[in-house]
Length: 159
Image 1 (cartoon, rainbow, N blue to C red):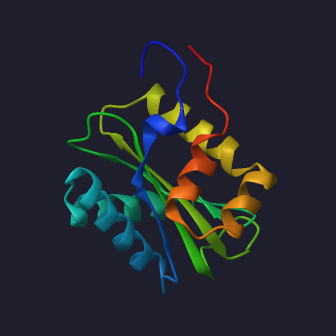
Image 2: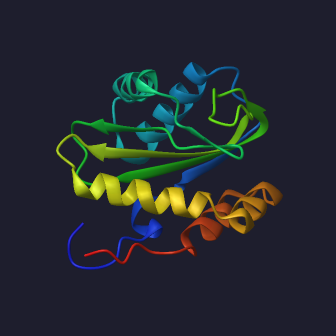
């Protein structure tokens, strides 16, 4: 993204936020995220699920404190896009702190994205490391409220 601050409201649309009771496995979670990517942007769900699984095979994206940040590069995307999923029942995600995950912020970037993808990942990581934001996310089940909580957060002011 050129020309200014990177903001979560430019990455995450309201229809890219969902609450669901559970995901029985990472594979199912990635399939659920892929279905969301299809409904939001018309992406091929099989390709998205495969790209997320391939990235996860390089190392778990569970960053601790119940948060996972799965991400992948996808052909056909015009810019970095985000999806957020809150699970009522946490999923064992092989996170760094071994705690199960209930807050999942997925980033999908164009195959050619370089710095933009890294800036978006850093912004999402900073947002999801904020204990107050995570507490609010866990205390609400309305997707519109969750979207507001996420998009009122910090911006990336890097040039």
